[in-house]
Image 1 (cartoon, rainbow, N blue to C red):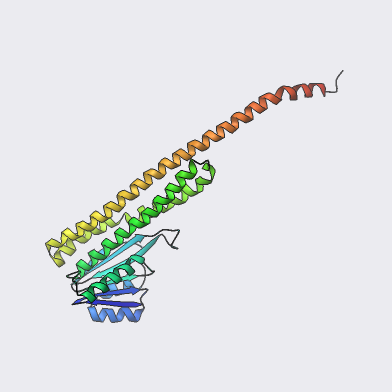
Image 2 (cartoon, helix red, strand yellow):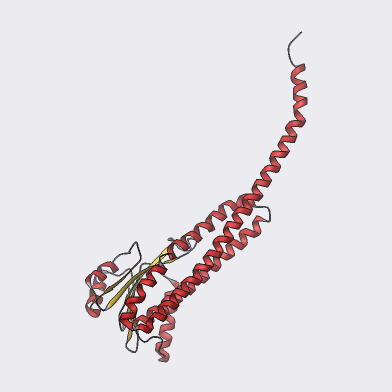
Length: 267
């Protein structure tokens, strides 16, 4: 499926699982490198940054909650040109729907939201990074709930919940980890294409990435503290149970011994 948005002389093409015919039409309209069109036809397993002629090609994977989506990440391919931006994705991504609505509003009001494809990419990526704050807030709420239930005496049930939240945080960190290298690799190519002043915008994206990363580090440390606390409480409960069983065994042993002696068939 292909959706086209236009404002003044700037065009945004949003592709969802594009067909070969749609890619051929775009290749002719925007004079795309055939290698780019071929890579847009299917998901890419790894992120990348390349300059192909007068276009920049960028692949980024953004994390998604396992509890909400079937996969822990979403891929977005960006083709950035002077007067256009092409995005290719293979699933619905809510922040892009919000960005599309804002883009249409600016077009109706004739407000300039971007001067070229590079600015459009930066604005879109900034919205994507900020949307991850909402995803992190959900994990924060899960950890709040886990903490309350741990101290309510549900340590055994929380072992599985801690593992689930830990997996979600791990997925987020693993998916976001390559972004810093990708944005740093993008900066010289984008500065050559859009001018040295564009470096500021790429560095602002790095700042958005760092904010998300710091939030995830805080969640990871909090999770580790909760896991250690839960394990300590479980160990204390187990020790109390063993102590009770030991006292019971010590109390019943003399009676068992006496009963055993008098039950012997001896003269």
